[in-house]
Image (cartoon, rainbow, N blue to C red; front, side, top):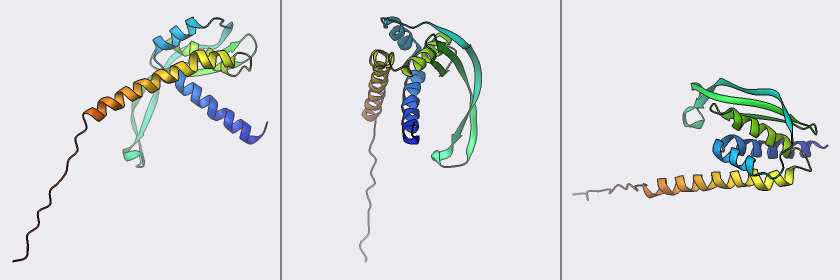
Length: 156
């Protein structure tokens, strides 16, 4: 596999892992339950709850600082066909983390990927885009444009 192919695969995987991690837990669980066929898997790392330090930067460019701690849940699973999936999700929902790891593994399987891509990942991404759009429209509705009148004195 070429370096470009590995890089592209990595970018794609980051995208679907991001969608799974940012999706609401109830959406992930209902999409999982709606799949017609779910492969068997076993836990390599049962869902664990822990804390991570969140770092920030003033203005996005300043010096990094510790913003605070955040609760995350992680999981790792292996499908019976051999693919391994990982997940990290915000919060304490163990089922969300386990399903996200299983979907990650399924997305790595050429035979399982098309179905789970269309039925789960694409739908979750669309739901997130709709929520972002709604939030942006609400914020735009409250926008206030300020302007300043400049007064000049004519020379006397």
